[in-house]
Image 1 (cartoon, rainbow, N blue to C red):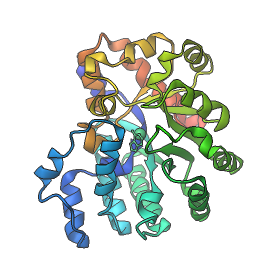
Image 2: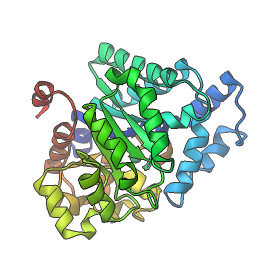
Image 3: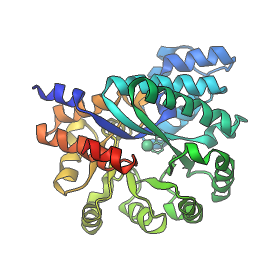
Image 4: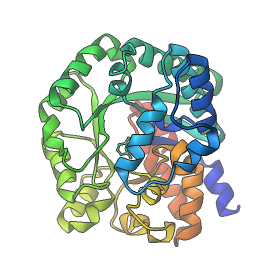
Length: 326
Ligand code: HPA
Ligand code: ZN
């Protein structure tokens, strides 16, 4: 079969996708209208033209503005359902969704409104397609440790709807150790732990995410190759990296697809996975990430299967179900 068909058709898991980053410009405008929220962009086209990012922060500013249209449980349902339809079309069988409650509770949206809307859509996807999806709650690292603890308190009544904890937003200047105590508390609660590290930040942030936060996976982590000892450790301990190629290019971590270090990461024996990060902002859902990488880099069929297999190995699906995919 043709490589592009293999990439599209192979069953896969997606492990690094911010649900607020799946909000397409058309839906942003529809929700703004429905909720009477005013945007500083006059049209879908004008908004889309603003998607020219120079770094992580320039993206985050627009991403938080886009999320401001989300107010009701139905809004969170509609956003999540739209993503799950795309994921299903890309043969995603399992998805672990990040959500950023602080982006919403800061605007006065109730925590339950956020979780219930997202969760109800995941249940419908399970029922309709057998697509399993679980939720990872992220703390915004530009906010304080105290605010993270307060958010964790809000989450406790919804503990059974959340499988893990992540750390996202502005990386530089907000090292993992800022959240060591709140992550320790989350570990006691039996939550899985992950963190963004080594996207724009140095390899040191990957090391401290492992040592001080005790994370099980690193989100992005592409800068690990600057540190040979760290790279060996990640390979030896089979710590997965949830890599997001189109994101890395749009946020200028690498200039072009052909400059991405995916091949070197794989050659170093790392458990690499391919993910879309914020697909509405970065130019494509998970299959588009696979297709563009495989078109630009010396990657073939064996790499495709390895990446798909890695996605299930790196997932938090229960062991018997995971075994079914390996
Ligand atoms: N990095 C950090 N924070 C984020 C990202 C990202 O890629 N996407 C959404 N929030
Ligand atoms: Zn991310």
